[in-house]
Amino acid sequence: MVQQSRKKLDMEFEEYYLSSSIPSMKVGLIITLLLFLVYTVFNRLLLSNVHEQDYFLRFGFIVPILLVSLIILFIKPLARYLPVIFIVLNLFSCFAIYYVGVSSDISDPGYNYFYAWVMLVMIGTHTLYRISFWRLIVLNIMQLFAYILATLINRSYNIPFFFINNLFFVVSMTSLGLFISYFLHSLSWKSFVHQKALTQNYHKLILESRDRKEAEDELVRSELQYHEALDSFPDWVIVVDRGLNIIMANSMLRQSVADAGLPSELKGRNLVETFLLLKQAEIDEMKAVFENGRISIGEISFEFRGQQFFVETRKIPIFHNNIVEQVMIVIRDRSKENEIELLKLRNAETKEIMLKEIHHRVKNNLAIVISLLDLQGRKNPDPNFQKLVREVELRIRSMALIHEHLYRSVNIDRIPLSNYIQSLVEIISGTFRNNKIRIEIQLDDILANIETALPIGLITNELLTNSYKYAFPEKQAGIITIKLEKYFATGFQLTISDNGVGLSEGFDLRKQDSLGMFIIKLLVEQMDGRIRITSERGVKASIIIPTV
Image 1 (tube, rainbow, N blue to C red):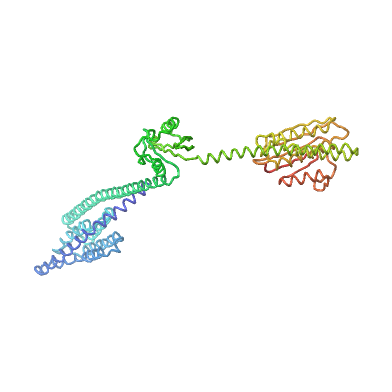
Image 2: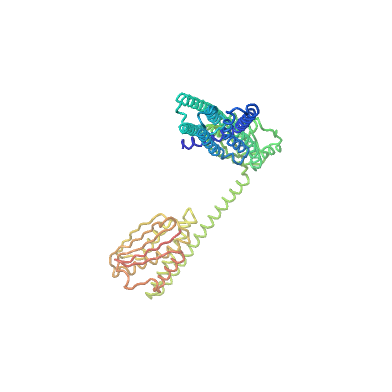
C-alpha cells in the first residue's frame, strides 16, 4: 500500500514537473533557436570567408529537434505523451553527435567547435527539457557514449592532450548539466509537495466549511422541525432545565394557558411557580429524572373550575454529553379515556357475572337432565337400557363439569385442562366401583377454551369408559394411565393407555361403527387433531391437538 502511494505520488510529480515547466520550455527553445539563427546569419554576413563557418553549419542538425520540440509544446492533445516524445527527439541528438564527430576531420581548424557543440547540446538537454531526472541521466550517458565513439572512430585520441582536454570539458559540462537538472528537479519537488499540501488543506478547509454549513443548516431545520412537531402535538409539552425553568412550551399548552386567563408567555418562567396544581410527588419525579436519566410516567388527578381532570405525565430526559441537561414533560388529558376505561371495567364485571350465572344455570339444567335420565333408568329394569342410560349420563356429566369449572374459574374464557380431566376421571372411576383397576395420572398445566375442553372431556370419557368396560374382563387387576403434556409451542397431547387384554386382531379405527368411536373420530377432526390407537401389552390411544 505504501509502495503504491509512493508510486502514485511520483507519477503526479512528474506530471506536475512537466506541465509547470511548459511555459519556460517554450521560452528557452524559442531563445535557443533565435540565438542559433542570429549567430548563423551574423557569421554568414560578416565571416563568410572563414573556413570554420562551413564547419559551424553542421551543427544545424540540432535545429529540427528544437523546432519539433517547440511545435509539440503548442499541441495540447500531445501533452500526455511529451516525456516519450522528448526522449525520442533527444535520441536523435545522440545520432547527430555521432554523425558530426565521425564526419569531421580533426586536422580541420573548425574541429574545436565539435566538443563545444557537444557541451552545449548536453547542457541544453538538462536546461530545456524538464523530464525525469533519471531519464536525463540515461540520455546524457548515451550522448557521452556517442561523443566518445565518434572521437574513437575519427582518431582524435592520436593527439592525447587534445583528446583528454576536450573529453574533460565535455564531462565537466555534463556534470554541470546534471547539477542544474537536479537543482531544478529538487526545487520543483519542494514546490510540488508544498502546493499539494496547500491544495489538500484548501480542499479540507472547503469540505470542513461545507460540512459546518450543512451542519448549521441541518441544526436550524432540525430545530424548526422539532418546534413544529411539538406544536402539532395534541398534548401539552414543556421542556425545563435543571432549575425547573421553562425552556419551551408547545402551542397547545400556550393556548390552554391563555384560555384559562394565565400569561401565555411561559418561556423563562419557573414551572413550580407557574403551575401551582403540580403535586410535590411530580416535582420530585422530575428532579429524579435529572439524576437517573430514566423516563418516568405518572398520573395526576385534580379539579379545575369545577371539572375533574385526570392526566398522564411522561418525564423524558434530554441528554447532552451523557448528562441530562433538560427534561421534556408530556402531559396528556386522559379524563375521557379514564371514564371509558371505568365504564368498560364495569361492563366487563357485569358481563363476567352474567356469564358465570349462565354457566351455573347450564350446569344445573344438565344436572336436572341427568336426574331425569336416572329416574327413567330405574323404571326400566332392562340391562341394555340401564347401560345406555349410564353412558349418556357420563357424557352429559363431562359437559356439565365444563360449565362448573368455568363458573368457579377466575378466567371465564379458559379453564385448566388438568383440573378438568382430574375431576372427570374421579366421576368415571366412581361409576365403575368394585374393581381392581388403578389410575395413574400425569397432567401438565394447560389452559384451553370451552371449544377445546368440551371435546377433550367427551373423548376422555369414551376412552376411559372403554378401558373400564373391556380392558380387564372378569374383574382382573390392571392399570390405566392418563397423560396430558404440551406438544410443541401451541398444542398438547392426550394419551390414555391400559395394560389390559388389548384390541382384537385386525382392529381398524376407520372401520369402527360404534357410537363411541364415531364420537371420538368426529371430535378429533373437529379440533384438526390426529388420533393413533395401538395395541401392544394393552391399548394405547394418543390424541394430538395442534392448538388450544
